[in-house]
Amino acid sequence: MISSSIAISIKKINESRISEVNINEAPFGKVFTDHMFIADYKNNEWSNFRIIPYQPVQMSYAISALHYGQAIFEGLKAFKQDNGNVVIFRPKENGIRLNKSAVRMAMPEVPEGVFMQGLLQLVSLDKMWVPSSEGGSLYIRPFMIATEEAIGVKISNEYQFVILASPVGLYYSQPIKVLIQNTFYRSVRGGIGYVKAAGNYGRSLYPTKLAIEKGYQQILWTDSATGQYIEEAGTMNVIFVKNNTLITPELEDTLLSGITRDSVLKLASKQNIPFEERKISIEEIINSIKEGSLTEAFGVGTAATVAHISAIGYQGNEYVLPPIEQRKYSLLFDKLLRDIRKGRVPDEFNWLVKVD
Ligand SMILES: *Cc1c(COP(=O)(O)O)cnc(C)c1O
Image (cartoon, rainbow, N blue to C red; front, side):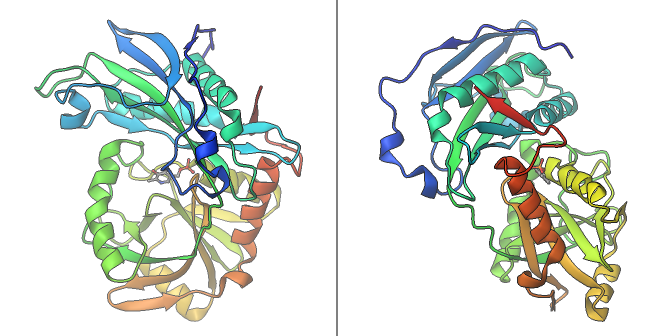
């Protein structure tokens, strides 16, 4: 795809709000930077590229995103390196995935140039909002919604593509307990599980609430066809370590293809750590924990990077994994990814895009 140059109009805020918040201690997703990027889609084309002060906007309650769910999003992060540079981690991958989601939801694709320039100019303008703390980052949320004012199920003729940015202070990823779920399902074959469409998340909240009531933080989702094979952990991909080999569910249309998952597998290859992408049954997980061959389980995703799984619940039993301090692989990947992002080791895969 050719990234042609676009003209973005910029309306800056009069006075930054940054002094009102401690960006190094901001809770996840609750504080937004001074500006946001918006593009409009109308008459079959993208136009009106603009960066304006972050603010509520006026919209009709009849917009189709609210009624029929034409709404997709992405999540990525910018980091402040030890030398003060600001970098974004693998943003082109998010642009590609956004378009995959757009196609599935019958929404227009966003040209790479619009995605990248909107992103880079916004982060450049709000650079001082990128936390410098060890676990801190700027979480970036690009999304697209159907904005045609029309009630009636049909493909919307109008859309907005928006990018928001939110400083995330020390992200303590506490170990999580996960509950295997095979009554409710996150996605189905032929459905939208492989894309980041809003509807996937709405449907997951009720089963998650039931798991929380039982003392778990997330669900270990299984496949809806048989209920026997593990797919994802909450809104993260999941990786297990069995006999010193990483095992992770193979990608299908019921799983989201995570960029963190891909990064971990590429790092594993580089380090000569064996990995397998294949079907993993509930039975295999439980038996391997019992016999002691399964030593680690962790979720991987942009928000937490690595979320250690301390225990897995299934049918009233709880299967406890070895203590976090003994986790050789998940701790290694967490550190490797941090070192790359913080600029402490060379960026051998060219994953970082520098913000001017
Ligand atoms: C976003 C997401 C992931 C993780 O993807 P990353 O690109 O690593 O952030 C995994 N599973 C689901 C369901 C997701 O929505």
